[in-house]
Image (tube, rainbow, N blue to C red; front, side, top):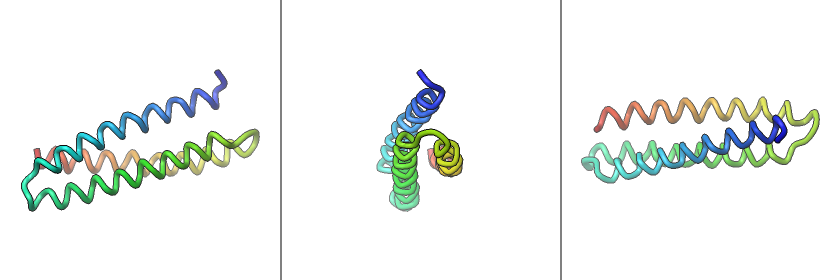
Length: 98
């Protein structure tokens, strides 16, 4: 397995784990009180959007070859960091309502 394939596989695994986490967040938001539920649902929708963006960027990265890989990887890493931050922020919000 090439380093590119290993990198992509690692990132895909993390996206899958985040998707599972997002499903847990969605379940918690449905169980929350009504006034909190609206805010939590907004976080879930934002996370869904971020995950879709990450999935698209990973697919784009998967299609690149040669020297284009490094520039595409840099763009992917920026997106990745925004996903990490979004999940960290959402985790804090959901823990606060638990």
